Amino acid sequence: MTLPAAENFAMTLTLGGRYAGQQNWAIHGERGTLTARVQTEFGGVLPEVRRVQTSRMHARTLSSLHYAEGDGGRASFETNFDHRAGVVTLRQGRDEAQTPLTVDHHDPVSLLVWLRTLEGQERAEARLTGGKALIQRLADVEVDGQSAYVYFLRPGGAYVYIEQAAPHRLLRLIQPTDFGPIEANLGISAPPRRQSGGKGRRRAG
Image (cartoon, rainbow, N blue to C red):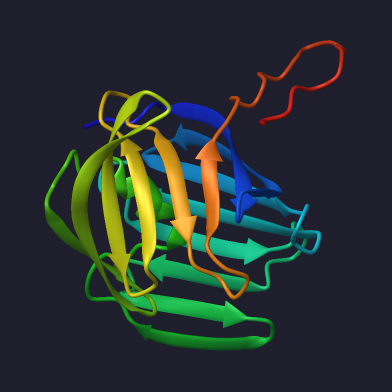
């Protein structure tokens, strides 16, 4: 299946039913690649921290070409997949390491985008730099009136809820953390960019 060429949406984070921040997604395609930028603003019952993740992936396979993570400034963690040279380069701070690239890999963001294309597949697996991710489909549920596929990811124990109808949006994510399971639910779509000044921005709630 083909995903939309450009998307902007917001997800509201909760922890134990209490507000814990917001996550904004921006996805666009360009010259055979798809780039997703995910900015998470933790807050509410969690310490106020910003995390920015950027994934550039192959437009057809959605395998990762480059991934970076940080606070919006210089990336604190970065992975580059050079298919021509057959090398994966990992950078964390000033440290750098390389390993052979023999199969396609996903990063934490491209994996979620790729899950949208499974269309109810019972089982799947994906290769990440930290090892193999196993994906298992659970019983379907409804999320805010929308029928959803539910996938359970191991290791990690995350749950991903994908809209069954096109465009197969991410409806809900549940990720275990040291604070407890953080839940992200699809909220109000991010407003389109305006060419001239306008009134205040809408907020997902």
